[in-house]
Length: 318
Ligand SMILES: [Zn+2]
Image 1 (cartoon, rainbow, N blue to C red):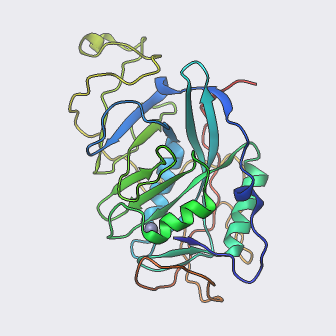
Image 2: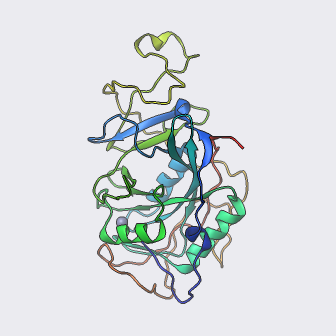
Image 3: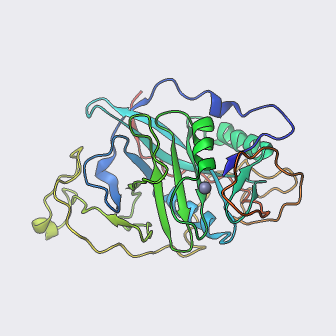
């Protein structure tokens, strides 16, 4: 995917002026289910990344909205630091699907207009959030960052804590790319933490991730016999045991999170504020630059709706 500024030279300010310091918050491990990628150990990652369930559901819907062409957008949320644990972490709380992208089966380009719209949505709806990264799909391609993706990430998401999520909708795979010691490995992805809301049912059904055995909350029932209760412990359980993957459970329509407030990132000529994700063809002016696309051409437009904030669960302190 590429982020393109076409005719205008204006650039979304939000991407260029990230926060200077992380917010103070506690690691929300007590409400989180960790998902591990193949080969990933259970040691706490250098940068734990938490996705709210609403965001995960919406990403899944967006990814499935076009199984042939790439779709994507920004991830909004909070960059935090748990002073007690001495750990920085990221909570992804909202999604800003790109609209007016130009995309094909192997590339996606954010137009300038789409960036402006996403930034506008960010400022209007998610004033207290920042862009923590971006996501895009790789239909039939697998989970990696192309040379172009890496270029884009370095240029538009340069902060050490900014992340990239890649989703393959056909095989239902997903992977997170996080810098380690400042370096981004385009082939090495990790899992993440699923931040549960009320229900403890998982919404993750990516086939390449496995659930880490989850600590049982203190007030849980007697089944704790085989799973020691370490609900508030800031570190993952030491001995992961194989656990059956949680079942997929996201009906396409029902999974749509309720919209507490109207979206603002509606397309210029079409107010799609409360509509479900949809895909439209684009025949507008071509995108300008593209250092290198991931491959074949195509034309499509991503959904036109900024997603509502999803149950922020960070325990922010003033
Ligand atoms: Zn890509």
